[in-house]
Length: 255
Image (cartoon, rainbow, N blue to C red; front, top):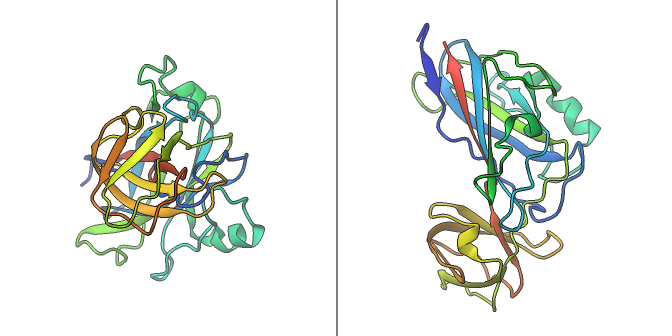
């Protein structure tokens, strides 16, 4: 693939803990998330991300950091912790040998500053980007060629560290108890169709961020009903329906 460009499929880190509670600086934004790229050494030339807002408004265009890692002797990088956890030194030290790259993202410099997409932000970094948080630099990625489930591909991991008070709460609340076989979930509060789109993966949290319940993918949505393809255990009245993947990333690579 020498001299060729490659765009990764969507990388969808999961926020499975405390997704509706504000982060603080240096919290784990999301733990290691794997993705496959063609084998060989490549340079990361661009980053594109969508970041959902808070309560159907923008507001999560906060600085964050991306760490990249590879496997070692077929072993994946050890966990940095759950989303919204403060980083524990014993975990960061354990992961150190696996880390192969770092990128700081100044969201205020790189996001759509006009907030034209209303309930979420997009940001992009590429050659020529002016990024005061950390100047643009090409990150070289190469994994273990034997690690990966797809022939001709290798596995890389990315993890995120928050550097601002991101809050992925939606204000979309469960209206009444919704049993496991009820795929049409009644909601109130913020209009659900101002927050969710078809295909979004959803998770519910108690108001304090506890009691997480992974639900399924949105198949239809109105202002007051979110229909999903599967449901977990009982979802309680006034639990908050949130995005399981509030940040989605695509990387541009050059071989």
